[in-house]
Amino acid sequence: QVQLVESGGGLVQAGGSLRLSCAASGLTFNSWAMAWFRQAPGKEREFVSRISGSGRVTNYADSVKGRFTIFRENAKNTVYLQMNSLNPEDTAVYYCAADRTPVIHTAQRYYDYWGQGTQVTVSP
Image (tube, rainbow, N blue to C red):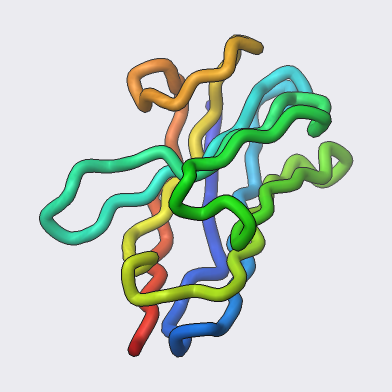
């Protein structure tokens, strides 16, 4: 049974940083691309970032480029999202997701497994 468990969310002031983690189990981790999505209140879930199984290829939404960094430790079956220079518009529930294909997907329908989400709140 595949499980994705996010952690690291919380309350931070604007300009601050957080690091999210997503621990995976039940899958051959380095064979799966991993991604982060987020959903703000009243909005649709949106793509944030994606990393290939090897970790060599990364993609970002324009809104987070230069501020967020995705990386993974395959030996620990964990993917991370380092978030710097946070602003109130980053407030959302953040989800990690797993995609079995190597094609770069930003649409959530391509992702097979999802975590339960972790809340990130950025105060002004």
